[in-house]
Length: 152
Image (cartoon, rainbow, N blue to C red; front, side, top):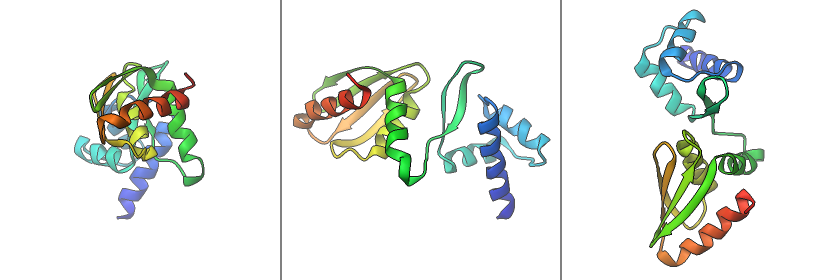
C-alpha cells in the first residue's frame, strides 16, 4: 500500500510542477521517477486523486487537483466555475451550461462539490454540461445562484 501512496504523492508533485496533458506523459514521468505504472493504474490514480483537466497556455490542457481542503473549498470551486463559465440556458428541468473548451468536466465537478440543493447531478462533455435540476420550478433560482457566483 505504501507504494501506491508514494506513487500518488509523486503524481501530485508532478502535476503541481509541470503541465501534464496526457496519461501517457504522466506514465513516462512516473517511470523516470522510479514508479513504473501502467495506463490503467494511472487512470485509477487520477480518479482517486480527483484530478481533472484545465486549460493550459503551454500544453492546451493540464491535470489539476479539484479536491481541496475544507477551509477554502467553496472559493476554489467558485473560481473554477467563474473561470470556465461562458453561457447557460434552461430546458424545462435541465440547465445547459456552456464552458470554455476543455473545462466542462472541471466545472461539473465543482458544481457537484458545491452541493447546491437544486442540483440532482451533472453530465459533462468537452464544453457543455447538462445539469439535472430537481424540478422545473427550481431552474430559475439555480440560474440566479450561478449568475451570482460568476458575477453576472
